[in-house]
Image 1 (cartoon, rainbow, N blue to C red):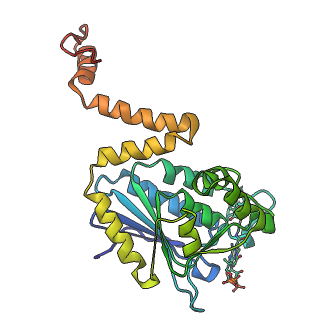
Image 2 (image 1 turned 120 degrees about the vertical axis):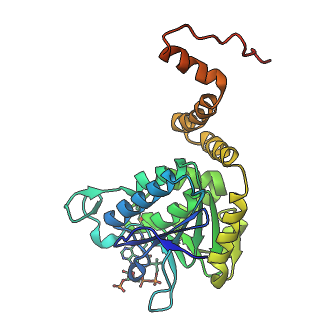
Image 3 (image 1 turned 45 degrees about the vertical axis):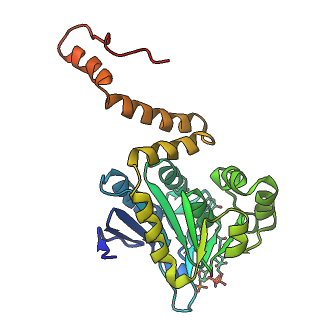
Length: 275
Ligand code: 2NE
């Protein structure tokens, strides 16, 4: 793939090619832990991918291996900048801005595929969890650490995890803070597929290209439908937004707007009240 760099950031790489965006967390010396700046940069890149009508799939991954040979997708919040009320950036303000990023990944009408090599731990595990699909390398390691390090994610990190692996397994994952290998993750439905680490990106690209052959509108409606099942009113808003989008594309919808602009009564008489 002829990846083209889109923008230069400090903590991430951002590339595009052939309908795909690739966003890479680049802090391998910290097992790709995120600080507030990392999350702001990720948010910026995801927003760009969302707005780009040529992009249908985003691959989210971690840079590596590190100089010690170990791989990481992401090891969650950077504990060295964790202050009293959140993760502290150069402005001195404590934040949990990864929650904004979670909502963006979940709600944007593109397919997000996590490519996990090495550790997906803590808030890094939640990041892969909320992606639409996950492809794991055979060296991937999954787990939550919150109750060990004085933290927890009771949002998607708990309830959505339980939707995926079931209540018993989700409670085990959080209460015991064990680590699980790629095949265990596959067995519990936490990932879609496992490949040798040197094939991870190629496999992700193949999955992305398969998705890109499909109808963008069908995919966006399906994503919002899956979300609506779990996401309450925000999920319904996404689904309903797609209904509005499709309605705007009809002559019937356009007639209402046109009549207003022409200062006349709308004429919907030719549109049937379908059964
Ligand atoms: C990921 C893991 C299991 C890897 O272990 P290992 O033995 O392969 O590596 P090591 O030596 O622990 O880590 C290598 C370097 O990366 C840093 C380490 O401190 C170490 O630095 P040096 O000693 O070489 O200078 N590093 C790794 N993870 C880091 C992190 N998250 N923050 C800062 N530095 C980190 C092992 O490293 C591990 O368990 N890491 C911590 C995982 C963790 O507890 N993450 C936070 C969970 S809470 C969270 O993410 C969160 C939330 O709960 C709610 C909202 C938002 C976020």
